[in-house]
Amino acid sequence: MKIEFDKLTKGYRKSNGTWHPVLKNVSLSIQPGDFVMLLGKSGCGKTTLLNMLAGFDTPSSGTVRVDGKRVADIHPSRTMLFQQPTLIPWLTVEENVAYGCKIRKDFHQLDYRVAQFIEITGLSGFEHSRPCELSLGMAQRTCLARALVGHPEILIMDEPFASLDTFTRAHIQEETVNLWLSEQFTVVFVTHDIDEAILMGNRVVLLGGSPVGIIETFDIDLPYPRDLNHPLFKGFRREILNRFKRSQSGNRGFL
Image (cartoon, rainbow, N blue to C red):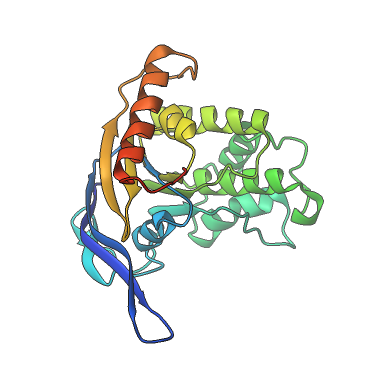
């Protein structure tokens, strides 16, 4: 599915009545099958963009379109994975992973698909555990399995691996990329980690400014799997960081 942000602006009315713009004139076209990383400082409006794409929020002006249709509400073709795990506490891991598909009456090979994604996300042996028995990282991996089991056309990800330990995070990053390569769904992924952006995405969109806009878009034409120590990887990291620093016009800022 093609995604289009067209002259998107979003702001809020403060308690004193003044208007506070967060995003201004954001235009971006995402092609079907892209893996787009939205990169920027914490609090710069990246999640606001995701919420409008998911249908949880609406722009102050401009439009968000998916396959030419204006996004007005949520849709099962767009699945969002949040920063913090959101599981149903009285259901087991297995039942949580299957929950969305059962609600949509998508029962085709469901048991097999659930078992497959539980294994991929490293949750084998915990199928019958409930959320209160899981670590934070395991709960987030359950959410990832639930998001993927429905074969979404668009996967929207809001810093979903921030709570994971280094080794689990690396494994899930790799498995997510492998699934994307095989299934060719579209991914829009928010991060403030430059390495994660280059490691996973085929495009990196650098956001910044006040109000926030697109600073620059980078095509990451490196083969998968990617090596953080490769000279070309380091070159992209340096280029993105330098471009961000130049955009600050002397003001201090960190990704």
